[in-house]
Structure formats: C-alpha cells, structure tokens
Image 1 (spheres, rainbow, N blue to C red):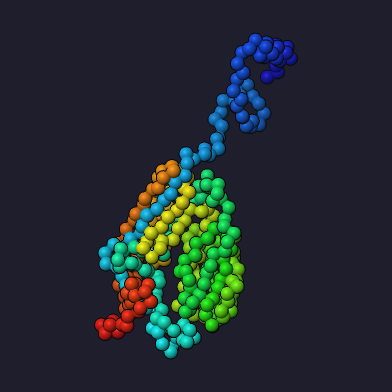
Image 2: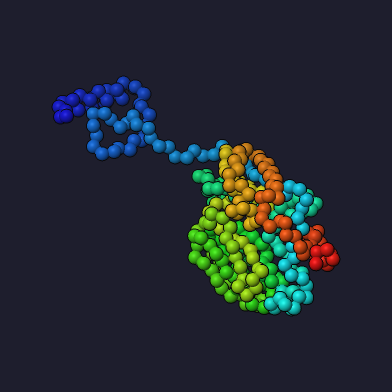
Length: 311
C-alpha cells in the first residue's frame, strides 16, 4: 500500500502540537521488528521479558537418614594382611568399605550429594565466582580422602598423598577430559586437576595400583550443592527465593539416585528445612555385611576384630 506523503507531514505536525500542549508522553515500549512492516503493526505482539530478580535469598538445610537398623561398615581387608599389595602401607590398618556409611546413633547417611538440578538464573552475586582456593584430594593408608569431592567448574583440585608408595588418580568423566596420572610417594605439593565442564552426577575415581581404592568427584556449574557429613546433615546457602528442584545422589542407590526430583520452596531471608529418609530397598548389596566393623569404632580409631560368626 502506498501512503501519500501529505499524511506523514500531517501526523508529524499533530505530534508536535500534542507535546507543546503539555499532553503526557506515552510510556516507551521496546519492540523487536520482524521482517518488513505491514499495515498490521507488530507493536502489539507480546515481548519476552528477562528473568525477574528474586525476592531475596535463603538457606536450605536438612538431614538424610537411613530407615531401619543401620548397616555396619564392611571391611575391605584387615590389618596385617600380607596378601594386600604394598601391605606395609595399605594394610597398616583395617580398611573400611565407605560405599555406605550410616551413623548408628542417629541413622544419618554420609556421602550423599544434594544439589540443584539446574543452575538458577539469579545466583547470589557473592557466590557467582568459583573459589580460587583449591579443594584437597588426599590419600592415606591407601584410601582416598575425602570419599567425595564436590567442586565448582574451574575450581582447582590438588591431589596429595601421605603414603610412602606410589598411587595414580584415574577419573571416569562423561563430559570432561579424562585424567590418569601417577602420584608420587608422599606428594604434599599437590598435582593439579581442574574440571572445565559440569557433570550430571558424580564421576568415579580409582587408583589402578590398588583396585579397592574408590572415590568420586563432582564438578558443578553453580554453588548450590552439598555432601552430607557423618551425621547425614547438609546445608546449601544463598539460594534464590522460590521453588527449586533437587537431586539426591548416592553411589549405592539404583541408577545412582535416591531421588531425581525433590521440589523445595526457599523462603527469602530465612532457613528452609528438608529432611529425607530412605529404606534399605533403595540401596544395593546391603544383605552382604561380613566382615564388618562398627562405625563408632571406625570414627574412634578402634576397629574391633571380626566375630567368630562373621568369619
């Protein structure tokens, strides 16, 4: 359609007159133009808005517990077992299986990873940058310490060893380059490891020299994750107020997850509690419990000998 140029001149004069007469100016509206303008203007089409700032930030805390009698920690090998490789170091003490650790006193389940399914749009500003201080992944008595290391993407990990025998750290990621490097005896400077991508769940770490050594690393692209302590407790600070979806991971759970979708609503400027309990059926291999040691003795450093019934 061809419009007469006189129409444009008339419209411009009317607009100037309106401003001069003190008429209120219209609100400014940002419009994305698509293609060539037509007689039906795109100005009335809905405009996609950006994510609104959260009403505030809050903290999530809770406890993961085991339902029923707490299973005792299995023993991988006993102190003084000469058949163990590098036995003078690796069998200097009884070696527990840390794949499932339940506190008999309060049924708290250790080494559970609780984390947001996705990074939120509004990470709390002071938490937006990954820590520059390295996380420590140590080895002592031919055990990885800690059993699970959760870090931000880009945060360095220093791999140490307090053992007088060589180890190697071998990772099995899905999204990151693999890492397989020898760790010298008594390495206290730290061999650097850095993850460049987030993983969907914790990745397995082994030592090829000592087949029983197993641990997990978990690189995350946001600050909203936690690993439960010896009492099964966790805390995640600075969450944007509103609803979030949590994943609950444990290495002995079927498919790795105790829960894939737990919805929580975070209160602004306050604490939100989320406690969860899981039955033995959620975990694999609990029926095989010999040989065993008591968790209380493990924590105190007093590992009782095996009973005659468990031999």
